[in-house]
Length: 115
Image (cartoon, rainbow, N blue to C red; front, side):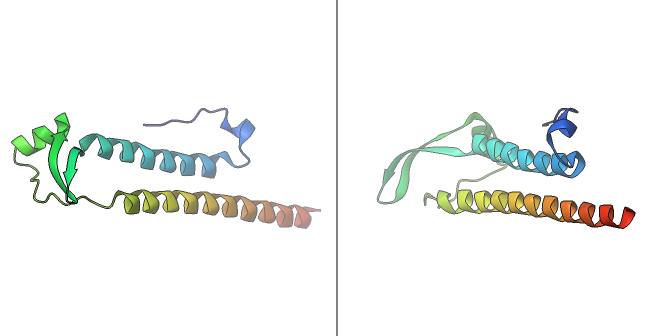
């Protein structure tokens, strides 16, 4: 689990919102790494099909325990997964910037009403 330091208040304008958002983004990367460790490694490809593969220890244990079955030799489209994940991360950062702008506007308006 990722934890950000308590000194974040000195660097970030609104540490509560920003830290929770950053922790969510880091959890996404952590899940991507964990899923990558469970995949099968393709060693040889012929006619757009896998002819030889190397299973990682985790995947091999799942196959031996009949928890997962390797049903097809067709290769998956890896680009779509990465593109989807990167677009969601970019969207999170855009939302992150928008929240900071809204908060700044609210602070300006509330500061104007005080005086």
